[in-house]
Amino acid sequence: MTRSAYDKEITALLVIDPYNDFISEGGKVWGRIRAVAEANDCVPHDPLRVEPGATSFGSASDLASALRRAEAAHGEHEKRTGQRDENWPDWYAKYLIREQAGEDLPL
Image (tube, rainbow, N blue to C red; front, side, top):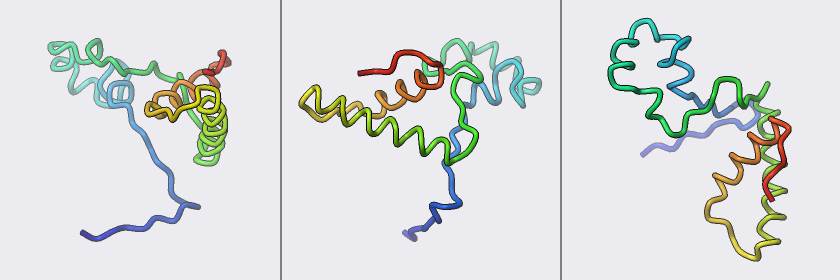
């Protein structure tokens, strides 16, 4: 297998929510797949769906800064609990969403 290298200065991770971006009302392909999506209750059955506009970052740099803040806060969380948090991705996600919403941050 060939391993690819990406320049960290010009590379970003783009996460797409297929329900909100494409197959919900207002999504880019909604008009073409509406009948199928509604027949299968696609949107209501997605438990991880995030409401449009709930969390966004203006640039890769903004996201990286937010992740660094989450990392520092999570380190404090692990110090308080005295153990490694195996569910750190969930903790980071909650932190990022709550930070942008101006809500209390996870401890």
